[in-house]
Every structure is written in C-alpha cells, then in structure tokens.
Length: 342
Image (cartoon, rainbow, N blue to C red; front, side, top):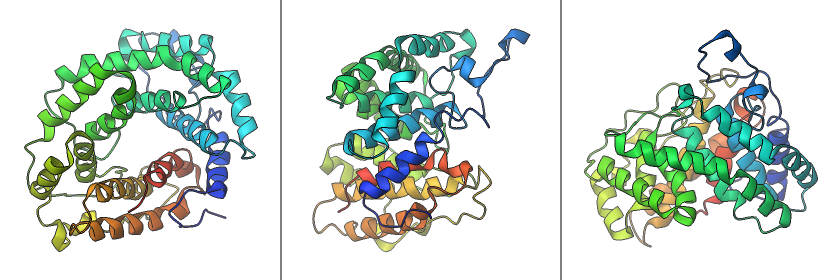
C-alpha cells in the first residue's frame, strides 16, 4: 500500500523509501540515456558508460536515488535496509568506478552532460557523504570526491558564461541547481559558494511582480517558488523579506492562486505527467523553507504553512506505485520532509 500522507519522516517511511530506492538504483532497464554518439563504437549500454549511476531510468535519478539511500542510512542506521545499502555501496563506490564515471565526463561531447541538474545532485550526494562519521562513510566520501571536484569545476567555468537564468520547471532550472549546490559549496568550496551567490543576485535580485504562469504539463519544479527558495538561502532575512514582498506582492491576499493549490496528476503511468507529483513535493519543500524564514506574526506564515501541507498531502501517497514516479519521487519527498515545518 502507498505511504500515508502524514508530513513527517519516521522510521517506517524511511524504510519504505529506502526499499524503493534499493529496487531501482541498480535497475539498468528501462533507461533514458543522455549520450552523444560520434561513431558506431560509441553505442554502449548504460553500465558500460556509467559504472555507478547506471540505474533508476536515467543518470541523474540514480545519483539522487543514492542521495536518498545515504541520507536515510545516516538518519536510520538500524533500519532493515541498512545492511543492503552498505553492501551495495561497497561494491559500487570504488576508486575504479569513480574513475570510470569521470572518464565519461572527459569526452568533449560530454561538456554539457546533465547540466545543471545532475551536476547539482552529484554535489548534494558528496555533501551528504561528508556528513557520515563511520569508517565506511568516510571511505565512500573520499572515494567520490574526485567526481565532485569535476562538477564543482564545471560550475565554476559555466556560471560566468551564463548571462541568463533558466526559469523552466524541469531539469534545466538554474535556481534549483544553485540551491542544491550551495548545500555542498557552503561547507566544502568557498569559491563555488561565492560564484553561486553572485549568479543568484545577478539573475534575480531585481525580479519583481512574478506572474507565476504555472504549472506546465510536465513540470516538477515551480519556477516562481524555486527562485524564492534560492533567494531565501542567499539573502539576509531582512533583505529577503523585502525581496519577497516585491517578487510576490499579493501573496498575503492569496494571489497568485496557482502557487497555493496542488497540481492535478491525471496519469501517473505517463512519465512526464507524473512530474507533477514532484512539483507538489518540491513546492511543499519550498513553502516549508520559506515559511520557516518568516518572523513570528508575519502575515505570510499561515499562507506558507497551509500551502506546504496541502501540497505534501496531495503527493506523498503517490511516491511509490508506478516506476515512472517511484524511480525518483522519494528524493523530492525527502527534501520536503527534512525541511522542518513551522
């Protein structure tokens, strides 16, 4: 049966999410590959190209599937899935396999591979492993660091070239990528953290009166709320409050209504339409984080609290059930549930 719609992470829900992720991070097929062929010999299987992240339907979902597993393993080390996670991580997170992942990225044709979504999730994974204080956890963390450095370097090279943000609600959204990357950079790469903040301010500091024409049919991110959550992370609280008031000036009056109401998901067997469950989860995450930044008595606190609860209640029962959603939705549920509610 699907998980309940309660909006707090507990051992039972953690076990369910971990079991689901264990079922797909090594499931090689079906697989949607992002791969440029330059010759017949470039036609290779997912595992040939990606010795660690070959499962979960696509590379980026496998990366954040592993983020889900390692996060839950740290938080619930006694759950029944802990031993299978350890064994699988020991088998896959090896220096040889990390070198294989890096070798794929060294291809000239892979310059923009998974930019920016996969880049950010790999850095999130590295940041998570750095939190592990067991001998195994430290070994996994050290093993992955060379791959994290590749993506950190790519962000440093890319951000000065990116004159404009990407405001879509899918993988190319730059606000989401910067928001995740800051979780890594703030603790491990001061130069990258500064580059992320500079880009966020350059792209969004002057944004006003957001129209919020969303959702689109296959979005899993809210362009409006993702930008607001990035700016919450980047700006001092008092500056953020002024920015938010200018960016969404009618929010206290319940406008725009589209940001406050969960999206309807008409067919969860359709991978693109199933993105809308992810939209509801990521909106729940954003609303929780934004609401927690508001001072007591602020008129938007009850707005944010209600919107977060509505979105999570709509999506959490559907994290598992069909592979088109369950190969990735637990990661977005976990982002939301780890953000403490008001």
